[in-house]
Length: 114
Length: 112
Image (tube, rainbow over the protein chains, first blue to last red):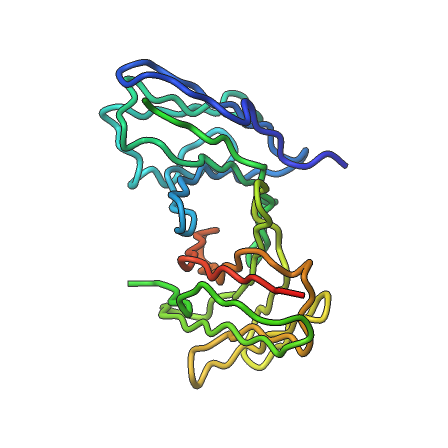
């Protein structure tokens, strides 16, 4: 069974440019998470979807970040415009949504903003 | 608020040494507890978990026991290997809505 797929793996952009990350969760997983991971830190939740509904986006900087999960499967996270401080690894994870269930993580997208 | 506190690293051990990485938590209700491992350049992988008090999670020689009285979930391994070098994250899931909270991670380096 395929794991969580993310693309691209690496992205280098100049500040003020837009950037988008794509995530394909494990088949059948209703819950999808986007996390931000700064160097030497743990993942910090940006947004959580249950199917196509964003149920927790309280930590998403909505002035520049947006996300969507059309049809409750794939998801895209966008930053526009990017700032230097956005340089980090963006992780996508999915779970079946059952209580106490584990999350399955993708390899992440490493973003560098110059 | 709900949170996880991990022992700060980095930790450097010789091969076959005993490992302990401390983790304590603050949570309302009865969370499930997890240890995730992240190898260089990869995403996080579940190492072990425990869903209720006194449960012991174990995998690949690693163990952790859910201690409600001390709100702890310390990770242990009796004899580490070079291949165990990675970053270890303690996490909790509030069993009320798929909310996960992660610690800051502890970097482990095992030298031959």
